[in-house]
Every structure is written in structure tokens, then in C-alpha cells.
Amino acid sequence: MSCTPEPAAELFARRLRRLIEVSFPAAQGRPYTDIEIGRHTGLSNQYVGKLRKGQSVPSLVNAGRLARLFGVSTDYFLSPPDHPAVRSVERDLRMVEARRAAGGAVDARNAGLLDDEEVRRIAEGAAELPPAMRGPVRVVIEQLRKAVGLGGGDESVRG
Image (tube, rainbow, N blue to C red):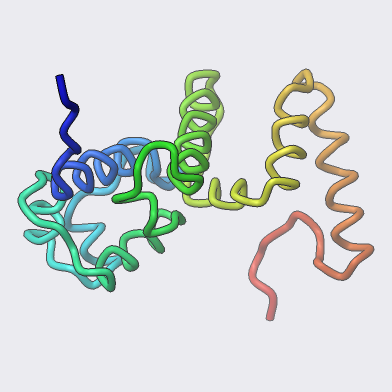
């Protein structure tokens, strides 16, 4: 019995749907619509719908637009499951799902920061701490950021 590879349009659609289902701004509280994806990427909502349904495969440029929106590499969309980019994104998506299941709000577009192995190890270590210890860890990180000139954890607009 031979295993045939999944057609590119279906693979792209399955991974795009996964990103849409899991990766959305916490403030929005729901996944993006095709219209919103189109607005953020410059693609038509009809085209986004075709991609999501597996009726089309995007050009590299359009795949790049979608990848930027979701904070992933274009490799995620069509590479085999054992590809490092696919494994990394799937690991990040599982972390987002686990945090949401535990009641935490997450902006999955920032999960791409976890592509850096050192950042991932720090985040995983902090996630294992009891909730009462996470605040002090955040304070230490903010102090370190200030010490090296990156500012504090307050990301307010600076004038």
C-alpha cells in the first residue's frame, strides 16, 4: 500500500485553516474572517476563501503575505510534517491552544518569537512555574530589558 502525498492546495488549505482557528488577536477573541485576512494582506476575501477551501494555491508572494500576518515562515504552508518550520509552528500552536484551554489569553501572532530556541526554553521554563511566581519573573525580565536599553514591559506608544 503506497502513501500518496497530499495535494498542495489541500495541504495549504489545511494549514491555513489551522492558523486561522488558533492564531487570532486576543483582543478580538475570535479567528479572523476572510474579509479581515484580505484587509491585512491586500488579498481579496474571495481569494482567501478559495485558499482556505483548497481551491487554489497562492503564489510565493501571496503565501508570504499570509505568513507575515500569522507570524510564520512560508515553509509552514507546504513543507512536510518533519520540516523544522512545520514542527516549530505546530509546537507554538499547541502551546497557544494549551494556554487558552487553561484560561489564558494569547495573541498567537507573537508566538513566532518562540522560533528562537533560547526564547522558547525561557518561555517553556516560565510556563512551568506556578502562577504566583510568574509575576516576579516578569519583573526581572522587564528590569533586564531596561538595563540593556530595550525599555520595560510597557509597550505604550512613545512620542
